[in-house]
Image (cartoon, rainbow over all chains, first blue to last red; front, top):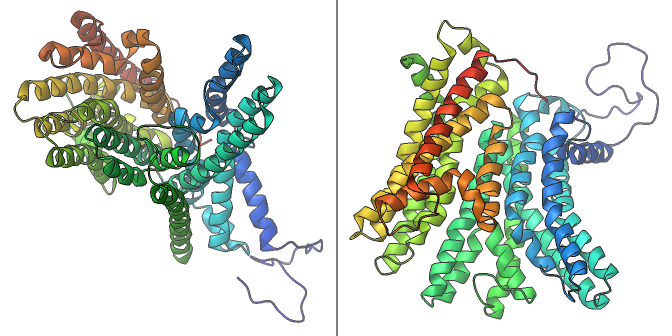
Length: 297
Length: 237
């Protein structure tokens, strides 16, 4: 960042080649970060990019919304007095789509600037590497949240319009929103960190899928075996090692839903929430570190 | 038709060079490590379903996808494939040579670990482990060919491959049983059940499974060569 000169008016940040100077209002680094966040959020859905880049995110978004529409349709058609699929189960039921969305769109936000070297241009502005990383991270987080919450909102609107119990629906939906937020924090961290380290798009996508889905497959297998062996504690501890199993553990602890394992002790339930937050914080810190190293080159 | 030694060497480097090889080796390592841990803590034969659920359904297609897209994907992505196909080597030889490398990697890191994991989990049933390995070898052969064709066709080959494996074969295949007629994994399972009756057969019939695998593999390889023959350059999106 350049030293501010006391007497002279602010000049161009990179070079002053003697052209007519810009004398309009100058905004701060915060505005740059905000603009970067907004453009990143749009780019995650292919907005502001080529038509081809819009196909994948919107295709995934539509497929992800489809079950919600079908559920609301089935509910009204058959006069059910509850949702066939609870709000809090939706993210687990569609985790494949969610993982592919995060894995495929994280490289759009993180890898491209690094691979094409345009990161140098961003950091030439009065924008710290941490602010750049945080803006990109926030873009992916917002996009992931949209992906997670649109079906929940569709279910909620359908349930309320079908005149199910309003208080109960609102409470369940609100819990699902909080859980979705925690999940999104973890997924954003995983996707963002891998995409900023592995610049080959396909490689980053598969690596993210391996961490998210193969990790989940391993944990689910261990939990199933632990349940069959009567060793519930082993299964509960295994659940700490994958984002989706953490989500399942926290959902079981907080709502009426159960997955592979029955509801465990209170201490274990709290641990799931704490680990979710810790994972999100550690991944975000690693991302900031990664960009500090890149900026230091 | 012969393979080209230089392309084989370059593809192997693209596959195993730097960190790529590590992640590729990590996938089977996770499967085998899981088998060792489960076997160490439980009786022989407990938890055998992880060979299917984790090894065959997840790890094998992921290895094939990573291998097939690593030998062709980056070159198509950054356009440097033109330097390769400008050489006086038939495009079909280019595709076949790249396939040979991806296939070897899929066999070594996708099918063999199934055998190892099965043997670790239940040492007294080698025929069951062999069945999964044979089924995995056939499915891996077909997966690798299909993903190579996808990599030659589109920039979004990895996502398309993931959607095919996870959404079509995994999620929808679990809901709609008719998908077994159009799922590479189900054909592999059918062949595995022919080797050992301990493996559940999806019910497509052995002849159909073998023929379908052969047809998809052959067509995909021809298609990959054909795509390279009429390759058009595109800019980054």
